[in-house]
Image (cartoon, rainbow over all chains, first blue to last red):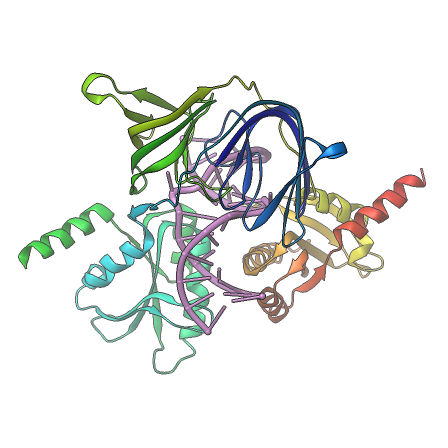
Length: 223
Length: 223
DNA sequence: TGGTAGATCTCGAGC
DNA sequence: GCTCGAGGTCTACCA
């Protein structure tokens, strides 16, 4: 990891063209060859960057102080250094990486484990039920044996309803499954998504992640 | 901008919970109070971060070496420093910011200016034609006076077709406009999006940004 | 390699 | 304050 603080201007030419006028900034050159340029605000997104794999060439002679970063697609990032204020390097090694909890995959596990949250007598067919246009999060049967397709989201908005609609259209063409009902399940369902879902006869289910995890924990404690 | 290289472990509790085991990393504290933690790879996304506005508290006494970053929503980022390898600060000032070219807004301008790209005899009604569910990018009439709604994307995929479909459904309820045809225009149209659009009777138009800009430049040179 | 869906998405505009 | 759409989205996963 190389840290450079420098007054510089930057030009990017690739999927779009963009220019950064001269100003003091932080330039990060990482061990994988990637380069990013940061201003003194915003935690998440750099002003400009080149993702790996890419190669950095530092100009010499006439081109001294001009860094050119290129990737395979031919995108270019050109950094023109005007004044170097700091330049240091550190060996950090490979990062052990982030351990996450609380994402959609876990919600899917929890709901599959407690499928009766969908209603008395529901039984799981399978998670990630494959279709031609992608896997349905959960497929199950209700107490009457009717097929139910569940689309799971952390935040339920209109896109999720469209996605489920496409699945339902497809699943309903399968005589072994039809008629298939839809349930849109999320930790939070946006009003417009609820309206659209309801209009299409799709059920809405708001999930309480902490409560579900609690139930799961209780269940685990029984064994 | 404060740059710290340190062996540290990190815990995030907020929209999810996440943990980073002890390892050497770069910690950036920016002038807006934001904090980000970088490994020695990936240009774009930090391992962990807290977006502004947020406040950083460095622990003292028993809590020495423990940094706590909190935002208004109550999300917490806790950084436990085990060994500081570098610590320096720089005043960078406010960045003049990025100048972009080649985005959807510009495409819309260009297409509106050369509406005949859609076909001989087309006339513009207006850009950003307002509807209850949002503005239609371009509304125009073809040579026969029929209404045409255009959805513009840089990259045309299935979502864009869905969006245009919703607009068409709505616009076709307006007796002053109906019947309304749809055109899906993008610099690149994904095969599946093309299939869906065609299936719904929506036309597809691939736009050449450089050529359109060239035409525009030629046009400007005439005046 | 290409397509799809998720993300602590972020960010900005419009209401 | 929210809602929605765009992003050089990036990234992981799967065919």
